[in-house]
Length: 215
Ligand SMILES: Nc1nc2c(ncn2[C@@H]2O[C@H](COP(=O)(O)OP(=O)(O)OP(=O)(O)O)[C@@H](O)[C@H]2O)c(=O)[nH]1
Image (spheres, rainbow, N blue to C red):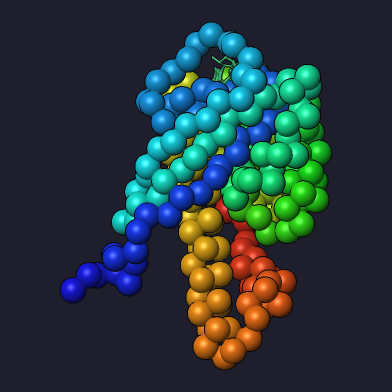
């Protein structure tokens, strides 16, 4: 007998979008997570996508990760990938106050485009190894994460600190959401109701308290 009710389920596939200002370390975080490699040079991204399988709490999940451009000239593509994204890593650099500010606009856009305040999001304060260049207090970032009801992690692509953790946290959020939707669809079909009419009720139920992971 399987120990979990999910043991026979096929692996899920989720679209993850990595967003943030130019140069905050989106490509480096993604390269560390997918390939375990550190990239020292800076080559601005236009758009790169990666497929990788990850095991989360014993469940196999296929991730399609889109590493996006932080530079202004490529922002026209944002609407499109925000529509397809099911989970978002919002990355700033702890060495740049402006990069945290940019997340405000990005988050507003995600919520507008997805029309959903509870979309899975993880906030990442990258470059945590550069402590002597810190411009963003941990408390400041944490208070934003509380407001947005999204977990906050300080990470370093350079030292590989909290790299797996941010992706896994996002996966958990997406899985939970998927499970809840599946479960409530089952029960509505059982009752002969239309599952789409209950979407809003369901979203409110999924609201979670913020979490903060420090180094
Ligand atoms: N010290 C340190 N440097 C980092 C870290 N992450 C990235 N960098 C450096 O920051 C620069 C930019 O990193 P990228 O990953 O290319 O940044 P990006 O956010 O993908 O940039 P765009 O493609 O322009 O959006 C590179 O020189 C990296 O080596 C980190 O955690 N610590």
